[in-house]
Image (cartoon, rainbow, N blue to C red; front, side, top):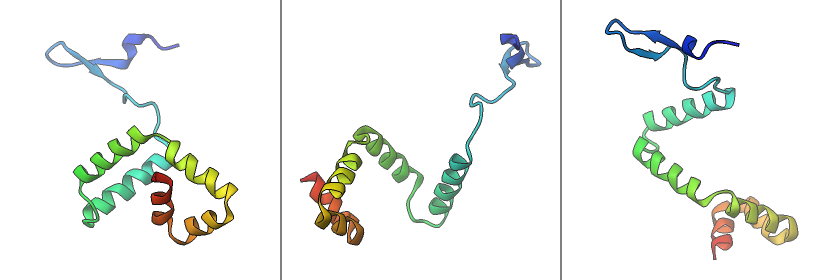
Length: 96
């Protein structure tokens, strides 16, 4: 096992910094997500600030709204059809 100090390198001023990334590994999915996000920002679909605000909003909601939508689609064939044809309308129905 590596010594804790092996993860640091000494700087010219005597200080230390991490010599390895703080994240152990980035997944293929994360690479694709970053690339798609950066492309969408570059193409002007949304700004980095809009993405940050949306991400914070979705993280505060958690998985409950999506879980409710899926559960209702399993139970209600008409709602399932609505979700397939007009996902926005289905999401609005879940909110109300």
